[in-house]
Image (cartoon, rainbow, N blue to C red; front, top):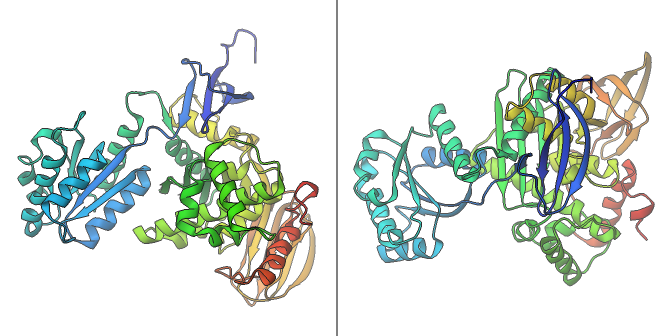
Length: 494
């Protein structure tokens, strides 16, 4: 820093039981100076990035696929944890609805009012809420959204809950209002908290600006997984799936994927009881560093499945998943970016995201990119955000996916070469820097930046198919690990 400059500020990027503190100089251009790992202590003067409070959300919904789909997209974009979804046509009785709401003790109740023909049924749901939660302390807040002709009929039944009326989530302004309101609840009384969601979205916008092309940020933390795509003008598609991750959310990943679903990504034979014990340990000691090869393989497998289920949630909510997979720039953050070997992060990105276009894979460096995104989201720096991102991201490789075999023409460093790509093959070429390529007979062509892991030629097709039997699957997965150098001496399969 120059003489007379102010002392550097700090920002803490929280994990589960620890945080990484970055010192930064915000003016005249943002400069990150150094970082350190913190335990449970925290300096109140430091800005903080984390997932916010866990808010139990109950949804009372009128029937209607359009309204429900819009609400699901809003909940995924806001990082809401929806604990209960009651529909007016689900066949449950008044007493059953009141009882389940009483047991849940929701923090926030979102009422999807629907069209006027659903008004009576939705009023019945709200009466069940009043019967079940009117004596709760503190009482839950109620947010009503949907058709304006219906919402006014609900004020009487919801009078005890502090009713807020939001625009219809089927309209853009209603979607933005729903996302903003849920995030306010997650932030709670800590007005200065930067939610991790907001940092990732700001980071995605900056990456897209720097690259001049759509960018996808993929974040896997201990108990949440995010997919954030931005275009250069700043149009963001965000999916923040809470409760699934590689730490406290590991058991939820196994519950959703099944033990075999997680085990299929591990390149060695593993018994079910031993794997379950290790999953339990991930939730019990979420920030433990994986040193055993099997534990490391489990963390990689959990990251695979967490990303896969975030994509599944996006698909079920009606997000344009094909657009997410077609981003030419992919950046890994969180635990997926902290794997010991860069090739391990690369393998997670290739196999879990399954990009359909030529794409450059990057990864974060000690949470620096998340910190920069948070600094920008909170308005803590005057400028230089894009330059700071360029200084702290780590390019890994350029990935070229093929649906079938092809002849590939590559230009790198002024040298042209041709490569035959066989169907089902998966290998790397030692090139670095800007690469131009054209695959004859296919639509794959373009330019990208290859990092130290080179150019990855992936002709395994989409979606990836894994053999069911261990005797066939394990050699296939181990070969994929070996193809990009993801095994290494510490994780060698014996």
